[in-house]
Image (tube, rainbow, N blue to C red; front, side, top):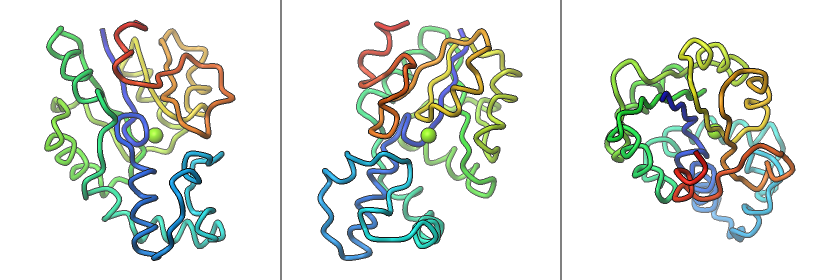
Length: 185
Ligand SMILES: [Mg+2]
């Protein structure tokens, strides 16, 4: 079988990692409960920033957000390695900007994710992911953004939504914990 995965907030806990970076760099002790209550993808609101300020801060912090010690979600590395071990194919489809693609690939390898040459795609917009996913003829695809799964809902692909505070009103089959993934297949 062919399995596709988004990376940020699906396999790795990127926004929470960024939230800690913001707390530190802005020297604001915003409680983590505010992170867990977020109803949108962007994380700047609890820090009292406007959307424009938030967007600026995200961009200027990217290096630190992407390449420090962002933790994978518990069990994610093990699930992907087990898939490979069982003879399946694993693909990564991330909308990270083009100039971060190759470094992200190396970073993932260093964290223990299995990355096969030619199975890593980056630099597209969210709504463009569908083209790669269709071309790859995936059997399964996992993402945290319902809007991306919406673009795929008419395709013969089994879709899963990685649980996040901002996507709880969506009805896609949900992965709350990676340890439950094999039970859902
Ligand atoms: Mg994501």
